[in-house]
Image: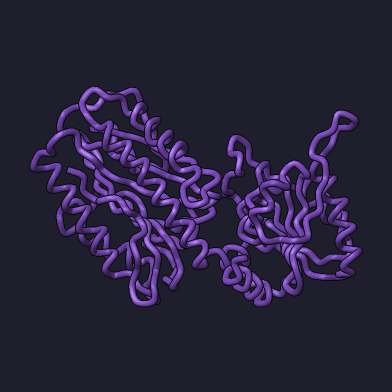
Length: 391
């Protein structure tokens, strides 16, 4: 059991006057139980006092054993004798649990404003908390007082426990297996998409089984030459373009192990970079390392963004850094804290985030370096074990 994060969640519940959290989103079930739902049809009832209860499909019992909740109540997700609605089946068990525990008029916190959600264990579909979900659960517990607990959950999650940091460290180690695959393949005439596929395959093939990793995925995007200038956008896209001698190759890589995501970027070069490419890379590297040196508890996230931006502006490329400095990583690969010029977030020990200064020059391409960092007692730790510069 991860006592550290359980205690933090309960502290936030007490601050907000919440007696019970009801969470169905897989990321929050994982946070509160240690079990990552496979198809997203599970529910945790997490009281501020007492032990949690997990309601889940019977078919997932082999996987729920990875968590720490002892009270597990199951239903059949599918049947040839009847059509089954998992929300209705869950609500039946929830109602029984409520009566058994005699919670009466307890305050129930629900996931009311998660516009961005992390993927399921099986990521092809994501089950969300819809009006039908809430209406069914509310009808099952008419005595309860319902309040939106989105803020409560996100305040709890913004600081990672030691166990979560170790999982994120593992995610970064597995991601760097993918970067090794990229390094092996970067040469003239190779397609961007071929490299991206090799990276993702290496992460899946070598990641599962590494340090108790049961699920591993990589989401890799390779953009070379003039294509890489477009990676300032909030998405990247690999194409059939073939690499050419001397050009930059920006490799954006979001990886996941056991439900915890990172966000990384490395910029390689095909062969030896020319003087301009080397100059731009040096500026970006100086920016990211200047930020790393400034990180410690109490620093404003907005000030970190300013530090990175100043290095690039003084080098004459200020207009070429077109996005925020970074963001938190964890149960999603974009979560608080927000490293933006207007952010109100202040760094705390245990926060884990990505910093990604960059320069994008039309007609040349883009250079970005992205590191994943943990705020420590008096500084930070870089948990990305892959060199910034690859010759």
